Length: 145
Image 1 (cartoon, one colour):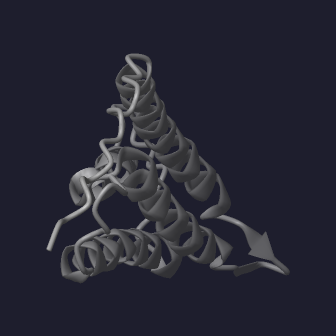
Image 2 (spheres, helix red, strand yellow):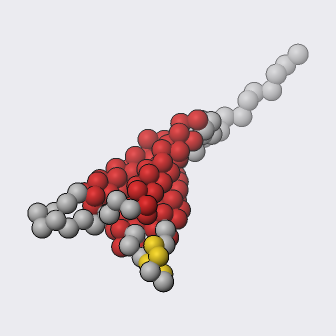
């Protein structure tokens, strides 16, 4: 029995621009995630003392949780690595730590009331849960990252 010869397909054309473009987009995504985390932290610090009718409103906590979920997802998707959750988490936590410290004049940006404490714990726990979910997620399909 004779076997038909297999058709030989030409190798796919090499695209030299693809790799640098991919790296550039990943770096741009990582940079955007870091800058957005810093902006988010500052926004949350501005919303922390918000009062309506003389009562503290914890809208900063809701903004922190929602923004940190979005930033974690954005970092992992744009960088393409699971460790990218740390990119927005590190500047966010650093800004919160700096804001909780007193200045030489005695000013504190993040007061130790229920909104400030919940903001720090909720925001940090959001990054922790997103990192844990990223670790437990199945491996991405081949060729995705």
